[in-house]
Length: 236
Image 1 (cartoon, rainbow, N blue to C red):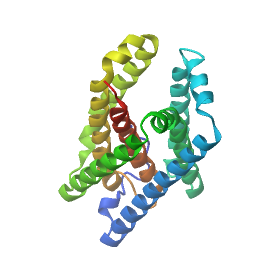
Image 2: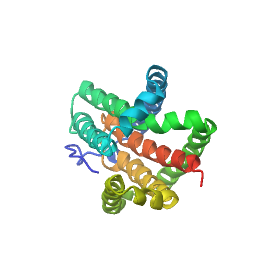
Image 3: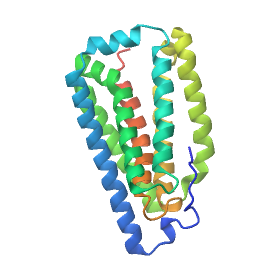
Image 4: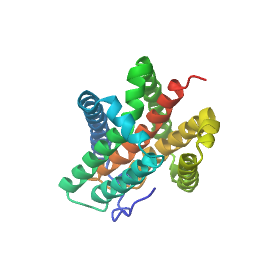
């Protein structure tokens, strides 16, 4: 989960109050812009691509989702490389933009299903996600606690989750068996990631890395929204 950060010895938390406030304002401003861009891209994709085309491609092979997951992980790695490591502002924005597009693509089948079968679920999931993010952010900032100790647990959790997702592709029965409990576990994992990344933007980023900080927060918020929406879409 952690990327190489050459500025770790000069974190925002050690900067003057004005610098810290400016960094937080820019980070959350870019997070809001990323969420807005995600919504616009999602709307464009839904408007331009027929649902039958997307579902047809995914059903063309039992390994279609495995290919999508692999491509998403590859693109995410590239986006993080561009955004982190003291890259130029242009590369940082390119990384954030690439990641937003990748998230919009991987969300597309789920959003299409929601618009067809339960359009209200998207709004409900958005409200619940927003409230959870607000609560977790408040905890992180008011306690001023460094939640970096969660990093190890989150890595293990994400490796297990990826393993289960890949296994479910080869064993369809496993997917139906995981169902509700897997979605709840991923919501807990995503909530932990938000706490971790919210803490990390103050303790592990330097002034000027607000774009990279926004990317890490956007990734966690998107993951939380995905599984909250999955929960609302359940019909059993």
